[in-house]
Image (cartoon, rainbow, N blue to C red; front, side, top):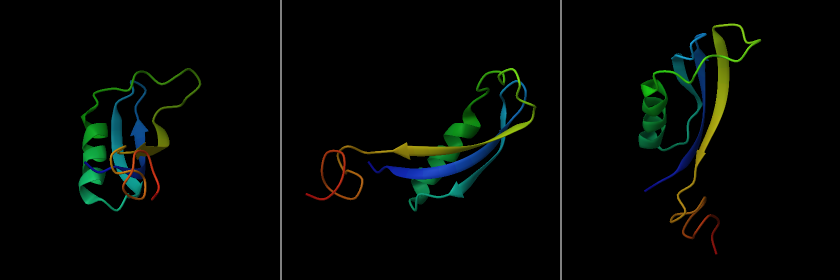
Length: 82
């Protein structure tokens, strides 16, 4: 029931297969961080790299999951203390 914001890096092969997935900025919620990494590593392919990208290509991605029940900083639907 918790959300978080992480930044991770991954390398994609020409076929879009992820490797070298690592956290750059953890959320502070270990279980959430582990689940994000597990989900990304479980993807067989993100699809072929677009024309013009040289493989392997490295990407830095910001992943923000907001739990609307908890809110960003506390109780409330969608964020902020009220």
